[in-house]
Length: 354
Image (cartoon, rainbow, N blue to C red):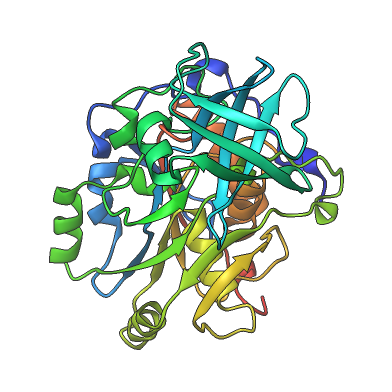
Protein backbone atom coordinates (compact mmCIF):
# COMPACT_ATOMS: atom_id res chain seq x y z
CA UNK A 1 0.00 0.00 0.00
CA UNK A 2 1.01 3.61 -0.44
CA UNK A 3 1.54 6.23 2.23
CA UNK A 4 -1.21 8.41 0.78
CA UNK A 5 -3.76 5.64 1.44
CA UNK A 6 -3.60 6.65 5.11
CA UNK A 7 -4.17 10.37 4.66
CA UNK A 8 -7.19 12.19 6.04
CA UNK A 9 -8.07 15.88 6.33
CA UNK A 10 -7.84 17.15 9.90
CA UNK A 11 -8.81 20.70 10.85
CA UNK A 12 -6.10 22.16 13.06
CA UNK A 13 -8.59 23.17 15.74
CA UNK A 14 -9.35 19.47 16.44
CA UNK A 15 -5.80 18.85 17.71
CA UNK A 16 -6.12 18.86 21.50
CA UNK A 17 -3.71 21.33 23.07
CA UNK A 18 -4.74 20.73 26.69
CA UNK A 19 -5.99 17.72 28.66
CA UNK A 20 -9.61 17.66 29.80
CA UNK A 21 -10.29 18.37 33.48
CA UNK A 22 -11.05 14.68 34.12
CA UNK A 23 -9.00 11.79 32.71
CA UNK A 24 -12.14 9.79 31.90
CA UNK A 25 -13.94 12.77 30.36
CA UNK A 26 -12.99 11.93 26.77
CA UNK A 27 -15.31 10.58 24.14
CA UNK A 28 -14.94 6.99 22.91
CA UNK A 29 -15.52 5.91 19.32
CA UNK A 30 -16.20 2.15 19.17
CA UNK A 31 -15.22 0.48 15.89
CA UNK A 32 -16.25 -3.09 15.13
CA UNK A 33 -13.49 -4.42 12.91
CA UNK A 34 -15.67 -7.29 11.68
CA UNK A 35 -18.39 -5.24 9.98
CA UNK A 36 -17.17 -1.63 10.25
CA UNK A 37 -20.01 -0.65 12.58
CA UNK A 38 -19.30 2.58 14.49
CA UNK A 39 -20.86 3.65 17.77
CA UNK A 40 -20.23 6.69 19.92
CA UNK A 41 -19.77 6.53 23.67
CA UNK A 42 -17.90 8.11 26.59
CA UNK A 43 -14.65 6.81 28.00
CA UNK A 44 -16.05 6.54 31.52
CA UNK A 45 -18.53 4.03 30.05
CA UNK A 46 -15.72 1.71 28.90
CA UNK A 47 -17.04 -0.95 31.30
CA UNK A 48 -20.10 -1.28 29.04
CA UNK A 49 -17.84 -2.56 26.27
CA UNK A 50 -15.77 -5.00 28.33
CA UNK A 51 -16.70 -8.50 29.42
CA UNK A 52 -15.76 -10.66 32.43
CA UNK A 53 -12.53 -12.58 31.78
CA UNK A 54 -11.23 -9.96 29.36
CA UNK A 55 -7.60 -9.00 29.98
CA UNK A 56 -6.53 -5.36 29.76
CA UNK A 57 -2.80 -5.01 29.05
CA UNK A 58 -1.25 -1.67 30.01
CA UNK A 59 2.17 -0.16 29.28
CA UNK A 60 3.72 0.86 32.62
CA UNK A 61 6.51 3.02 31.21
CA UNK A 62 7.05 6.39 32.84
CA UNK A 63 7.81 9.58 30.91
CA UNK A 64 11.02 11.27 32.02
CA UNK A 65 11.56 15.06 31.83
CA UNK A 66 13.78 14.46 28.83
CA UNK A 67 13.92 17.92 27.21
CA UNK A 68 16.84 20.08 28.32
CA UNK A 69 18.18 23.44 27.26
CA UNK A 70 21.80 24.46 27.28
CA UNK A 71 24.48 26.81 26.10
CA UNK A 72 27.74 25.86 24.42
CA UNK A 73 30.89 27.45 25.75
CA UNK A 74 30.96 29.40 22.49
CA UNK A 75 27.57 30.91 23.39
CA UNK A 76 25.36 29.00 20.98
CA UNK A 77 22.07 27.77 22.41
CA UNK A 78 21.20 24.08 22.37
CA UNK A 79 18.08 21.99 22.83
CA UNK A 80 18.57 18.39 23.99
CA UNK A 81 16.03 15.58 23.87
CA UNK A 82 17.21 12.46 25.68
CA UNK A 83 16.26 9.33 23.74
CA UNK A 84 17.64 6.67 26.07
CA UNK A 85 20.28 5.99 28.70
CA UNK A 86 23.09 3.53 28.05
CA UNK A 87 24.93 1.15 30.32
CA UNK A 88 27.86 3.03 31.77
CA UNK A 89 25.90 6.22 32.39
CA UNK A 90 25.96 8.02 29.04
CA UNK A 91 22.84 9.04 27.14
CA UNK A 92 21.79 9.07 23.50
CA UNK A 93 20.03 12.29 22.57
CA UNK A 94 18.85 14.53 19.79
CA UNK A 95 20.81 17.77 19.92
CA UNK A 96 19.49 20.83 18.10
CA UNK A 97 21.80 23.77 17.59
CA UNK A 98 22.67 26.29 14.90
CA UNK A 99 25.87 24.31 14.24
CA UNK A 100 26.41 20.59 14.72
CA UNK A 101 28.04 19.71 18.03
CA UNK A 102 31.42 18.03 17.59
CA UNK A 103 32.94 15.45 19.97
CA UNK A 104 34.39 17.20 22.99
CA UNK A 105 31.85 20.04 22.91
CA UNK A 106 30.79 21.06 26.42
CA UNK A 107 27.16 22.06 26.96
CA UNK A 108 26.14 24.00 30.08
CA UNK A 109 22.61 23.02 31.14
CA UNK A 110 20.24 25.93 31.82
CA UNK A 111 16.73 26.21 33.30
CA UNK A 112 15.11 27.20 30.00
CA UNK A 113 15.80 28.30 26.46
CA UNK A 114 16.58 31.91 27.44
CA UNK A 115 18.57 31.63 30.67
CA UNK A 116 22.34 31.61 31.02
CA UNK A 117 22.35 30.44 34.65
CA UNK A 118 23.96 27.00 34.90
CA UNK A 119 24.64 24.34 37.50
CA UNK A 120 25.46 21.29 35.41
CA UNK A 121 27.35 20.46 32.25
CA UNK A 122 27.50 17.57 29.78
CA UNK A 123 29.96 16.73 27.01
CA UNK A 124 29.42 15.39 23.51
CA UNK A 125 31.26 12.06 23.46
CA UNK A 126 30.45 11.10 19.88
CA UNK A 127 27.69 10.45 17.42
CA UNK A 128 25.60 7.41 16.54
CA UNK A 129 23.78 8.15 13.29
CA UNK A 130 21.19 10.88 14.09
CA UNK A 131 21.84 10.73 17.84
CA UNK A 132 24.62 12.18 19.98
CA UNK A 133 26.18 10.35 22.92
CA UNK A 134 26.39 12.65 25.94
CA UNK A 135 28.26 12.18 29.20
CA UNK A 136 27.87 14.19 32.40
CA UNK A 137 30.77 16.41 33.40
CA UNK A 138 29.24 17.98 36.50
CA UNK A 139 26.25 16.69 38.41
CA UNK A 140 24.38 13.51 37.44
CA UNK A 141 21.60 12.66 35.02
CA UNK A 142 18.99 12.26 37.81
CA UNK A 143 19.98 15.66 39.25
CA UNK A 144 19.94 17.32 35.84
CA UNK A 145 16.53 15.96 34.85
CA UNK A 146 14.97 16.68 38.25
CA UNK A 147 16.31 20.24 38.33
CA UNK A 148 16.06 21.40 34.72
CA UNK A 149 14.20 18.73 32.74
CA UNK A 150 11.03 19.57 30.82
CA UNK A 151 8.22 17.18 29.90
CA UNK A 152 8.76 16.53 26.16
CA UNK A 153 5.30 17.33 24.81
CA UNK A 154 4.65 16.18 21.22
CA UNK A 155 5.50 18.59 18.39
CA UNK A 156 1.82 19.19 17.53
CA UNK A 157 1.13 20.65 20.99
CA UNK A 158 2.04 24.24 20.28
CA UNK A 159 2.89 25.46 23.75
CA UNK A 160 5.55 24.96 26.39
CA UNK A 161 5.09 22.34 29.05
CA UNK A 162 3.76 23.43 32.43
CA UNK A 163 3.39 22.01 35.93
CA UNK A 164 0.09 20.34 35.04
CA UNK A 165 1.75 18.28 32.31
CA UNK A 166 4.03 16.64 34.90
CA UNK A 167 0.98 14.76 36.16
CA UNK A 168 -1.38 14.63 33.18
CA UNK A 169 1.16 13.52 30.55
CA UNK A 170 1.72 10.43 32.70
CA UNK A 171 -0.51 7.39 33.21
CA UNK A 172 -1.60 6.54 36.75
CA UNK A 173 0.10 3.14 36.43
CA UNK A 174 3.45 4.53 35.21
CA UNK A 175 6.27 2.82 37.11
CA UNK A 176 9.42 2.36 35.03
CA UNK A 177 11.34 5.46 33.92
CA UNK A 178 12.43 5.57 30.31
CA UNK A 179 9.83 7.01 27.91
CA UNK A 180 10.10 10.35 26.14
CA UNK A 181 6.48 10.18 24.95
CA UNK A 182 3.46 8.94 26.85
CA UNK A 183 1.53 5.76 25.96
CA UNK A 184 -1.42 8.07 25.45
CA UNK A 185 -4.30 5.57 25.44
CA UNK A 186 -3.49 4.97 29.10
CA UNK A 187 -3.98 8.64 29.96
CA UNK A 188 -7.77 8.14 30.01
CA UNK A 189 -7.77 5.80 33.01
CA UNK A 190 -8.16 6.91 36.62
CA UNK A 191 -8.27 4.88 39.83
CA UNK A 192 -12.08 4.87 39.98
CA UNK A 193 -12.44 3.49 36.45
CA UNK A 194 -9.78 0.84 37.07
CA UNK A 195 -11.62 -0.27 40.21
CA UNK A 196 -14.90 -0.50 38.28
CA UNK A 197 -13.23 -2.51 35.52
CA UNK A 198 -11.67 -4.99 37.92
CA UNK A 199 -14.89 -5.35 39.92
CA UNK A 200 -16.67 -6.71 36.84
CA UNK A 201 -14.17 -9.53 36.48
CA UNK A 202 -11.79 -7.96 33.97
CA UNK A 203 -8.15 -8.82 34.65
CA UNK A 204 -5.13 -6.57 34.08
CA UNK A 205 -1.47 -7.07 33.20
CA UNK A 206 1.44 -4.77 32.45
CA UNK A 207 4.14 -4.73 29.81
CA UNK A 208 6.88 -2.11 29.45
CA UNK A 209 7.76 -0.27 26.25
CA UNK A 210 9.82 2.88 26.59
CA UNK A 211 8.29 5.11 23.93
CA UNK A 212 10.91 7.00 21.93
CA UNK A 213 10.67 10.22 19.96
CA UNK A 214 10.69 8.08 16.82
CA UNK A 215 6.98 7.52 17.43
CA UNK A 216 6.51 10.95 15.78
CA UNK A 217 8.81 10.14 12.86
CA UNK A 218 6.92 10.58 9.58
CA UNK A 219 6.72 7.90 6.92
CA UNK A 220 8.52 9.32 3.90
CA UNK A 221 8.57 6.24 1.65
CA UNK A 222 5.82 6.13 -0.97
CA UNK A 223 5.54 2.35 -0.60
CA UNK A 224 5.01 1.80 3.13
CA UNK A 225 6.90 -1.50 3.04
CA UNK A 226 10.06 0.52 2.34
CA UNK A 227 9.73 2.38 5.66
CA UNK A 228 12.33 1.53 8.32
CA UNK A 229 10.74 1.50 11.77
CA UNK A 230 12.55 3.02 14.76
CA UNK A 231 13.59 0.72 17.62
CA UNK A 232 12.26 0.86 21.16
CA UNK A 233 13.10 -1.19 24.23
CA UNK A 234 10.32 -3.38 25.62
CA UNK A 235 9.73 -6.20 28.05
CA UNK A 236 7.01 -8.85 28.22
CA UNK A 237 7.52 -10.96 31.33
CA UNK A 238 6.29 -14.35 32.53
CA UNK A 239 3.35 -12.84 34.41
CA UNK A 240 2.00 -11.36 31.18
CA UNK A 241 2.41 -14.63 29.27
CA UNK A 242 0.58 -16.49 32.06
CA UNK A 243 -2.20 -13.87 32.18
CA UNK A 244 -2.78 -14.17 28.43
CA UNK A 245 -2.89 -17.96 28.73
CA UNK A 246 -5.50 -17.77 31.53
CA UNK A 247 -7.52 -15.30 29.45
CA UNK A 248 -7.55 -17.72 26.53
CA UNK A 249 -8.61 -20.60 28.79
CA UNK A 250 -11.51 -18.50 30.11
CA UNK A 251 -12.60 -17.45 26.59
CA UNK A 252 -11.79 -13.80 27.30
CA UNK A 253 -10.31 -11.21 24.98
CA UNK A 254 -6.85 -9.68 25.14
CA UNK A 255 -7.44 -5.92 25.04
CA UNK A 256 -4.25 -3.92 24.54
CA UNK A 257 -4.32 -0.38 25.94
CA UNK A 258 -2.42 1.57 23.33
CA UNK A 259 -0.39 0.77 20.23
CA UNK A 260 2.69 0.35 22.43
CA UNK A 261 1.02 -2.53 24.29
CA UNK A 262 0.03 -3.99 20.91
CA UNK A 263 3.59 -3.76 19.61
CA UNK A 264 4.94 -5.31 22.81
CA UNK A 265 2.64 -8.33 22.72
CA UNK A 266 2.99 -8.90 19.00
CA UNK A 267 6.79 -8.60 19.18
CA UNK A 268 6.83 -11.30 21.86
CA UNK A 269 4.65 -13.51 19.63
CA UNK A 270 6.37 -13.12 16.27
CA UNK A 271 6.95 -16.85 16.11
CA UNK A 272 3.21 -17.45 16.48
CA UNK A 273 3.25 -18.16 20.22
CA UNK A 274 3.56 -15.59 22.99
CA UNK A 275 6.84 -15.90 24.90
CA UNK A 276 8.78 -13.70 27.27
CA UNK A 277 10.80 -10.99 25.56
CA UNK A 278 13.23 -8.30 26.68
CA UNK A 279 15.12 -6.10 24.24
CA UNK A 280 14.75 -3.75 21.29
CA UNK A 281 11.99 -4.12 18.74
CA UNK A 282 11.41 -2.40 15.39
CA UNK A 283 8.19 -4.26 14.58
CA UNK A 284 6.09 -2.49 11.93
CA UNK A 285 2.46 -3.60 11.75
CA UNK A 286 0.75 -2.53 8.53
CA UNK A 287 -2.09 -4.07 6.48
CA UNK A 288 -1.22 -7.65 5.63
CA UNK A 289 0.79 -8.22 8.82
CA UNK A 290 -0.86 -10.77 11.17
CA UNK A 291 -1.76 -10.26 14.83
CA UNK A 292 -1.19 -13.30 17.04
CA UNK A 293 -2.32 -12.07 20.47
CA UNK A 294 -4.45 -8.93 20.54
CA UNK A 295 -8.24 -9.20 20.11
CA UNK A 296 -9.16 -5.55 20.78
CA UNK A 297 -7.34 -2.31 21.49
CA UNK A 298 -7.93 1.04 23.13
CA UNK A 299 -6.10 3.75 21.24
CA UNK A 300 -6.08 7.48 20.60
CA UNK A 301 -6.44 9.01 17.15
CA UNK A 302 -3.18 9.19 15.22
CA UNK A 303 -1.47 11.46 12.73
CA UNK A 304 -2.30 11.09 9.02
CA UNK A 305 0.14 8.80 7.16
CA UNK A 306 1.77 7.69 10.43
CA UNK A 307 2.89 4.18 11.35
CA UNK A 308 0.30 4.20 14.14
CA UNK A 309 -2.72 4.74 11.90
CA UNK A 310 -1.25 2.01 9.68
CA UNK A 311 -1.18 -0.31 12.70
CA UNK A 312 -4.85 0.40 13.46
CA UNK A 313 -5.72 -0.18 9.79
CA UNK A 314 -3.84 -3.48 9.86
CA UNK A 315 -5.90 -4.51 12.87
CA UNK A 316 -9.39 -3.24 12.01
CA UNK A 317 -9.19 -3.16 8.21
CA UNK A 318 -8.13 -0.21 6.08
CA UNK A 319 -11.61 0.74 4.86
CA UNK A 320 -13.11 0.46 8.34
CA UNK A 321 -10.34 2.55 9.89
CA UNK A 322 -10.42 5.39 7.39
CA UNK A 323 -14.24 5.54 7.59
CA UNK A 324 -14.00 5.77 11.38
CA UNK A 325 -11.48 8.60 11.16
CA UNK A 326 -13.70 10.51 8.72
CA UNK A 327 -16.63 10.15 11.10
CA UNK A 328 -14.48 11.25 14.03
CA UNK A 329 -13.56 14.43 12.16
CA UNK A 330 -17.18 15.02 11.17
CA UNK A 331 -18.28 14.51 14.80
CA UNK A 332 -15.58 16.92 16.04
CA UNK A 333 -13.63 14.45 18.16
CA UNK A 334 -10.43 15.73 19.79
CA UNK A 335 -7.25 14.29 18.24
CA UNK A 336 -3.82 13.02 19.31
CA UNK A 337 -2.15 12.77 22.74
CA UNK A 338 -4.59 14.80 24.84
CA UNK A 339 -7.53 13.90 22.62
CA UNK A 340 -10.33 11.34 22.56
CA UNK A 341 -10.06 7.57 22.18
CA UNK A 342 -11.20 4.57 20.17
CA UNK A 343 -12.06 1.01 21.17
CA UNK A 344 -11.33 -1.23 18.18
CA UNK A 345 -12.02 -4.91 17.69
CA UNK A 346 -10.12 -7.04 15.20
CA UNK A 347 -10.96 -7.62 11.58
CA UNK A 348 -10.84 -11.38 10.78
CA UNK A 349 -8.19 -10.74 8.12
CA UNK A 350 -5.79 -9.50 10.80
CA UNK A 351 -5.71 -12.82 12.59
CA UNK A 352 -2.59 -14.94 12.24
CA UNK A 353 -2.89 -16.94 9.08
CA UNK A 354 -5.88 -14.85 7.99
